[in-house]
Length: 73
Image (cartoon, rainbow, N blue to C red; front, side, top):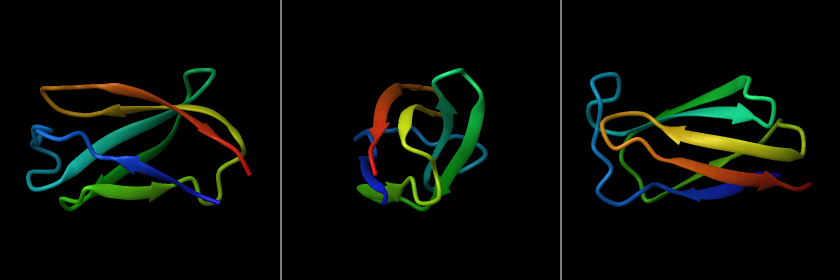
């Protein structure tokens, strides 16, 4: 099972992903468990192969934002 994540509108691109979205995914203990890098899109799916639990997705770049995701299977 995966969850859909809205890419923040007005997200500023960074040098690692000049034409898309980049984010780091952390588990509840603060350990980085995944990276998301993709071309511009309004919605992405994430979580396939991950254990159920609480995750934090921190967008990279100048306008960094952290979102809490609860993955339920």
